[in-house]
Structures are given as C-alpha cells and as structure tokens.
Image (cartoon, rainbow, N blue to C red; front, side):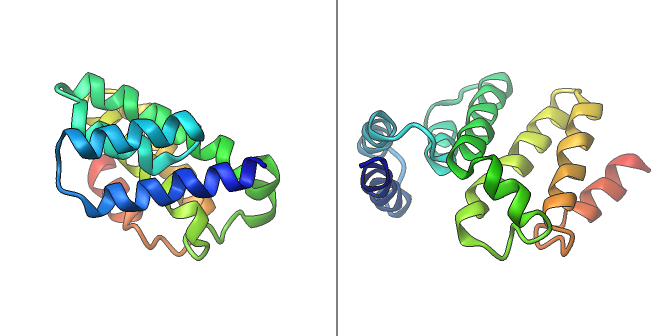
Amino acid sequence: APQSLRNSAQDMIYDAMDMSSGRARKSLVEKALKIYPHLAYAWIILTEETALTQEEALEYYKKAVDAGEKDLGKKFFKGNEGHFWGMTESRPYMRAKVYLARALWDLGFEDESITHYKDCLRLNPNDNQGVRDVLTATTC
C-alpha cells in the first residue's frame, strides 16, 4: 500500500528532523527517500546535509518542490488553492517553494524567483510566510 510506505518514510523524516546534523541524519533521509521519493522535507534536509554550493542547493530545492507537487497531486492543488498554509500536509511544499525562490534570486534568476514567490501568494494569500515583504524588497 503506497500510503503506508509514505507514512513509514514520513516517520523517518520526522525522526531525522529531530537529529543533529551528520551522517546518521543523512543516511536516514536517504533510506526514507528509497521508500517514498516524494517528500519535500527529505530533499530540504538533504540540502542542509550535502549541498556545498548555492548551485547544488538550488538543484536540491528543485527536487524538493517537484517531490511536493507529486506528493500532493494535481487534485489537491485544484481543491485547496488559497488555503495551502492552513493544511499541514502542504507546508513542506510551501517551504520548499520559498527556499527555491530564495536560491534562484541569490543566483541571479530574478524572474524565475519572482514567479515562485507569486505562486506562493496564489496558494496562500494570507501570506503566512512573509512572501509579500520579500517581493516588495526585491522589486523596489
């Protein structure tokens, strides 16, 4: 059952989130991804544990966003637009989007960054992540 595999992998990610940095944390995350590869937080943790450059971090954040999109599914996006932050299952995806937008901006991909930030506002108009402040600062 895919859902039970997802839950097992998610439990591993929660355990990894409680661990300090290091080889054991990275190993647990990699094990979780082998069970279920579509967990945005797993890719975020891998970024923290392995990315040595901004370019590497960007690639991991892209994987995190992609994983979150696959995990949630198109139906979830259609049915919950505007309420993403209120739904805990979409928060890893929303965090990944903001990390990706920030990484894109830092590497000089401003237009693509702004597109991701605006998408965050579409999905979460209440702006619990403070995206409006970032957009205002970056576009002035």
